Image (cartoon, rainbow, N blue to C red):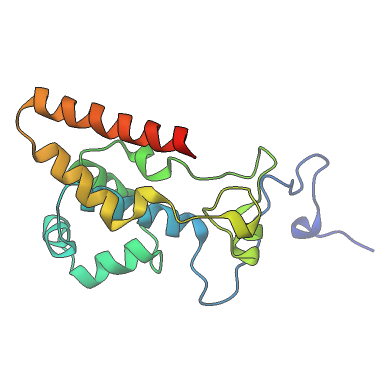
Length: 171
């Protein structure tokens, strides 16, 4: 049997568990695109920008921003760089907190298949929604940063911490 150039795999150069990419079912957004889009949404909301305003800043419609934020459309490198400048964060911000599967956690494809993408590695019954992506948290953070006086802001911060600690002690 003759070997063609495309059928040969050099020793040590085949796919490894960390470099192999598995296809997702048609219509399933890539988990990385979903994560990056959710980080765009988080930062946009923290800054008090609407999808329309962010779209205007980059020359897109709000519908396109929606698709990016849902992960339905992939954000290209140059567009991601543009978002990082407009949203005043480093490009790495969009990849923060993303599981990579190298520490024993699920690979992206495994997490999608199990419906656990972006969730902590815990039993399904004990999972709670990420509080950092809730509207209440985002509104609280925006209101907090609208407090002009730094000493008042610090006192509110200390109060919130003490209330959270006292409730934990009561449990």
